[in-house]
Length: 510
Image 1 (cartoon, rainbow, N blue to C red):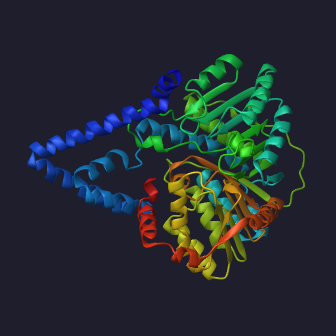
Image 2: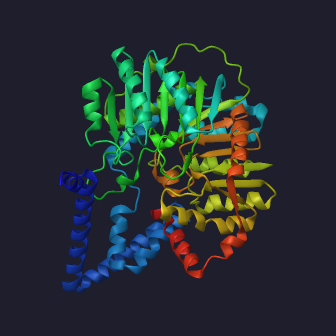
Image 3: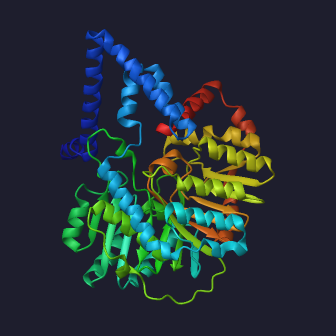
């Protein structure tokens, strides 16, 4: 009985209940108006047509437009109104001012570090990519930085623990998911000790990402008990709003502005294979040591101030002292993507990597739900003779999403792209390796949510030794993969092809 009561009053159940009430009330109101006022139907049709014209005229992905236009035309009474309420990407004036303030602060603090032109010896392609991230995302490119790539979450976890124990001034932790268990409990014990020593420890996690893994008041209780500053990104409230879609999917750990970690791993036991959920969990991460870690410090602080709604801090107080000279041959550029600025930075980085490839593009992603631009870029690269290979999971974490991923296989295979599924379990890494010259590791999936709706981050690499490590990891992991063939896709029964076709149409709304 106690478990039943706990389940019934769980925050997820309550939120879902209130959301359903709001949807039901809206539908009932519309139906009653339709029953009693004939002109109401005409008004709804006019609103739906207006919404369709508005969607067609917007600068957004064509697949996103189609995904909205179909239900609007099929259900003119509800479709147009639902789009006006939930389908745009409108910001309140208050939110817009806050986000503009965040962008200004990023630019103000990091502009002195801009040095894209220093990549001229590596070619114009490198300069143009670095310049784009500096001017649009306000994220500088750095030399004097070394990286270490981790092909498994457990290897990264070991290094995290070592670096956390060395912290002297501050530790910043920002993750989509935090779950109590070996990984988080080990890290939390260190954070508590460091907070007692006077180290500035801050933790931020996404509310939806951690909804099933942490208690409702975890942030407040953690701060009260331990002195660790903690806050929740975009708390999930039972009010229908598009803002519920904008999640903090970033993975950032910064120590003293000298060392930083990012990649695919969250702070939960399945990411280090201490808990088995979908077979063996194949993930990756990267450590950044040197000047580039400062950029990730500023990324964290600007979003922290946005969430806390506090006056901007003196960021110079967090700047690390002069760092020792690091003899690294390449350049490192951490970057962040904000879904509220109408600039798909993550997509631009991926497209640039694909379009500039001359020999090979190796991609690891848990979801292959590509937009039209990315699909076209991959197909053109393969048809041009570039060795394009993509690795996805064989054991899914979400059945519908997995079916949607597989629905994108056939057109890519027809163009010559090679696709492999990791048979031991689930791939969660988000990596690109291109021509031994360019690469990226980060939190950005190849799907609509990561590319257009979430706060994300990554690290772009140019001529960095870790690129060859990413390639070597990809090639060695292929030995545990099965190749997907065009014949397999064509041999599917008609009903399954029909289901996949429907899923592809509505992929941008999932």
